Image (cartoon, rainbow over all chains, first blue to last red; front, top):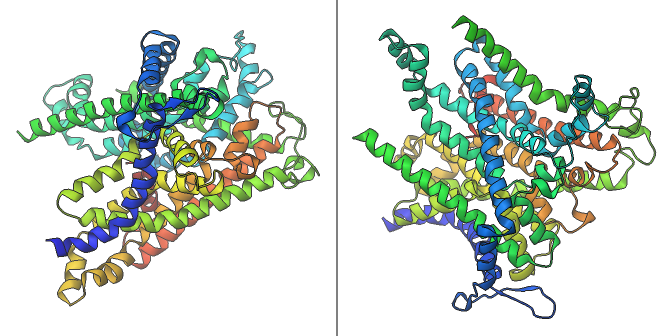
Length: 293
Length: 286
């Protein structure tokens, strides 16, 4: 057994070593900064490399701020924005993926190509496009004011930020949704219809359960980057009124003299997502077991 | 039913237009004659090469950002693809307890937001491994770390579809395990290697978060960083031209990769053609 494994272990060694050094170790470094101390004179963070001497004072004050202080608004806003953007993305993305998988026919290849295209266009370029359109002299702004809508889109508008998130991430949702729906055996839906289900019932009782695992996985695929997003906000709003968790991390790590707070927030964000993910994994494992039964 | 069917195509085509038209307009504005990025003032190549100072081809900082982007993408590609292939093969075959550990280690980066990796690496490179300077070296290390998992995913999908029968046959004919991997398995991995090259090139050249966290000022500014820092300023349509160049580069790499995969598959008796190549590319999202 051991001699058989030797080659495979040797093959994984470079990659594993790399990930240990540049992926696992950095998390330790984040913890050491988050639970380190602050230089009394220069106010810079001093990492504490020995876990036995970790000091949780600063971390708990940040957590307090999240639970009942100024950071609470940011966290709540992040969750609300992401949830609304996810709901809009599904409302838009599911019908598109459904049509593509079931009714596109001869046009499928063309449609698929057009839908994959945004993948290969830089995210920032796609935001740049909207900044141009929504600026006071832009096409979209002028078209809207023609209909009497005068709105300051680019200065702290939650609507713009959420629309930006939807525009940015919905292509990444459609593709895995399409992959899921394409694998469904549609004869099951036909069978349900033959047995007297209305098309709505067949959709609710057959299509959705068949696609549910893929739906959730696709949702996670776009929820993760949305939770860590700060550039959409920076480009489309730049206002403290729409700040999300990612903006706070960016601010504390890159532009402030308190990187310790940034490190705590990085741990908080990873922890929050980790809890969400393990809940998902537990659920899928349970569903898998029930299916087998 | 018929009403629903008619409504659905309208929604789908509406979506396609909505998702692409803004970008098309932004590309069109790179040919604007005036300084505005939102009011059309006539067609010209002014911001591409006409303007002796402000056009993409004459602005030294923009040219530098293009070079930086290409160098970063190519260096990352060269390191990450071999690293990812060996890791994928090993992780696919390894048995026992180490299997779970390796699987875990290669899948966690896939579900970690980029900002977390970027911030963690910045802290590491400034406080722990301070021998690694920020800028190009740190940016390469960061991008390799973030993209190695996607190479593993692509290569592993191919390994699953190949199965183990070819290697078993080679072993029966007297090849050592290593020879079987080197002379039988590796050549069959070509399509996934090409796919990895394309995907890594495109992700790295478009990457913003990690590259930005690990940058060290103007010298290591890439095209996305340049776009980010000037979108909300009074930038000229040269910015649109720069962004358009980025799209053209990515699409060029994609076309090359698709053509390469298609030719390889046809030559080796596998179903080739655009449809299958496209299916390969779309499956990468999984």
